[in-house]
Length: 111
Image 1 (cartoon, helix red, strand yellow):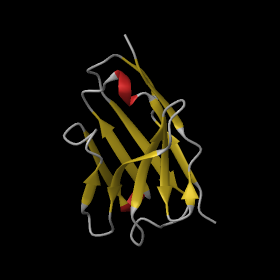
Image 2 (image 1 turned 180 degrees about the horizontal axis):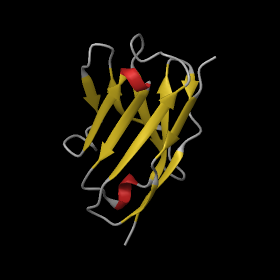
Image 3 (image 1 turned 180 degrees about the vertical axis):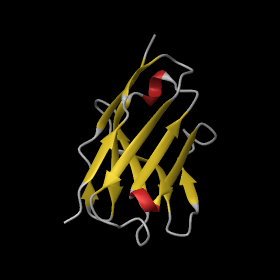
Image 4 (image 1 turned 90 degrees about the horizontal axis):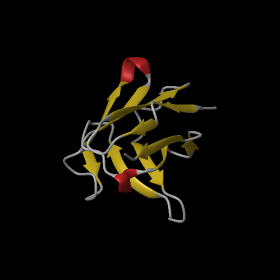
């Protein structure tokens, strides 16, 4: 059984940065794509970024150029570096790999 635990969320001013981490109890990074999703109040969950086993990455248009997904296979951890944050980035962010989901971490962008 794989468990995913996110951390790093919080309150930040517009234009600021945060780095989210997702630590896995099992080694799934080398096999499966890892994803970051987010869900804002009253909205559907949306895919933000994906990192594939070969290292290729893909981003939603809304975060392209501002967010960077990366992973450390030795630490079984995937990261989401978020720069130039906007109020519309406010959401609960979830880590996902295969059928496994983390509990989510709140990101609030507000002055």
